Length: 271
Image 1 (tube, one colour):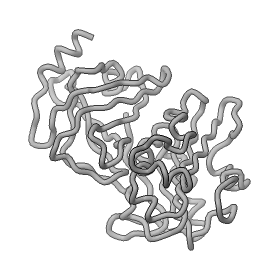
Image 2 (image 1 turned 30 degrees about the horizontal axis):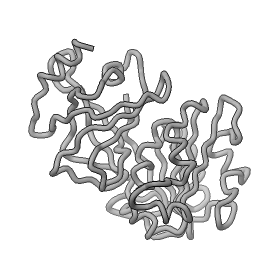
Image 3 (image 1 turned 90 degrees about the vertical axis):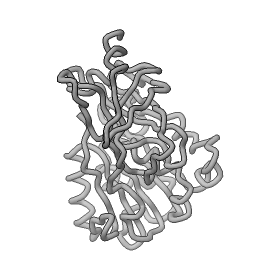
């Protein structure tokens, strides 16, 4: 750890990067962790966007990857959710960070998982696998989302039960949240599903869509309807591809910041 701290002490801001301090770290299991860092006073982002973060590489230069911001746009701290990859160029180091360490933060957030990229609708479905949950943690704590949609549904697919990061907070329907607690109690739904262990809901997201299990307890029809439903996808390439094809087969059209439509996909990946 001392070596990492020695490296962190040498970090210098650049035109594209600020240097921030790690405030807290939570290890969910041996494969998954989340952490919070300081937020520059001038840093602005839309809930759902991603940003480049990183540490100093072995060559002395910043080693950066794209990470979705897990905190809402109003939060005073910035939170991220990350996998641990033993031989990953960045994550092998990032998983060792502790409070007080320094980290690079990009100055320009971007991304497609924003409400600006969707046309108006009644139900918002947020389909995520693994750490693809991160941008949705940001969106579901944004009051504007509850003004735009009558129902907000997070569907989180993981391999093991212990991979369900933030499960307690989500199962409580964001109880105690300073801005959306009341709206979430009436409008927010959490559907966790596990693919490789016993759990009350099992199977991949596309399976839950097909058999209707996904819609249990959610007002409206037990199917996805492009006339009223909007969808965001963030997960493995396989999941994104499979569900996007399914949506297009139902008549959904992919949107963007420049051309809002029925569903959007995050195409940035962590490594």
